[in-house]
Amino acid sequence: MRNIDKDNITLEELYRLYTKQNNRLNIIIKRSDKQELKFRELNQELNEYKNNLEEKVKIATKEIVELNLEIEETQREVIFTMGAIGENRSKETGNHVKRVAEYSKLLALFYGLDEEEAELLRKASPMHDIGKIAIPDAILNKKGQFTDEEFELMKAHSQIGYDMINQSNRPLLKTAAILAFQHHERFDGDGYPQGLKGEEIHIYGRITALADVFDALGSDRCYKKAWNDNRIFDFFKQEKGGYFDPRLVDIFFENLDKFLEIRDNMRD
Amino acid sequence: MENLLYAQTQHTPQIEFNEKEKTISITGNSYPEDSFSFYQPIIQWLKEFMGNCSQNDTVKVIIFIDYMNSSSLKVYFEFFDILEEGNDKGVKIDIDWYYQIDNDIAEETGEDFALDFETLNIKLISRN
Ligand SMILES: [Fe+2]
Ligand SMILES: [Fe+2]
Image (cartoon, rainbow over all chains, first blue to last red):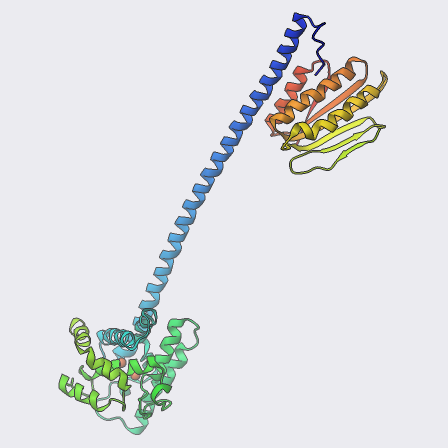
């Protein structure tokens, strides 16, 4: 800007300078407003984009959750169907596997396993006899005593079931593999296939053994009639530390009403 | 007289003033925290340089500023005032005002300068 010599400047010149500076100021203000407007528009666009993104993430998350539920549901169905194949062929009812699953969860919780593990056990339980798929009908449904040879074949269902399921790394199937393998082990070491003793048998195996036998004794089977409760209870007392983990037998009797309630609610 | 060189920063443009070649170029953004003190030595250099120029000299000015804040804009009026003084005394001054094709604010700013300094030779050039 030119220096203004106050003494010599005319009013006209001063007015011209004033107008010039005022015009420039207007240009600056006008441009500043434009930039502000642009900034606001961009900001708004950004916010809309952000909201949109949040909405999209929400939808995607919901879809993933639903998909996961569906996968879990499918998994459960497959497990029950697989279990049912084994059980049905041996004329056991669908409710048998469901009751055993519920007893197992209850035993697990009273034994001190956490809810997550107990639930895992409940879900895996229906697969414990999956190995029976490989056992011929003639043996599965035989009325009367097995020959030694037949019994050896029957016993193979533990190993077969284990080999079938143990391929997977999923916790559920890993659990199921343990059940399939160990549900005929006895606490005193006289069970099969490995003859494991006491706590060598995984807690899942000990639980399933008790739950499975409790339910089997109370049901009609091709080879026997259902036992009455007193006979079952006597058997359990007798097999405390024999067939069954003594701690689990105690738990069973201490909470007998809850086990009977499950049985009543899920009758065949 | 020393040439004037400033490297570009996030807030300030690259400045390349060459006395012998008589070229002046400013490229980048201009929103320094304190525009007046940032541009003070630049304006000073330009004043001195213009004072040394004589009638037959040709000066090439290139300005390519994407974004400038309001105080920078005020400084550039002063900048053009100095160029106009040189132009008035017969120095030939060519000014190229560059702007990105979609940057209408930079384009309009160039137009505003061309309108305000009608005797100056300001050419508006768009770039992709
Ligand atoms: Fe079995
Ligand atoms: Fe069973």
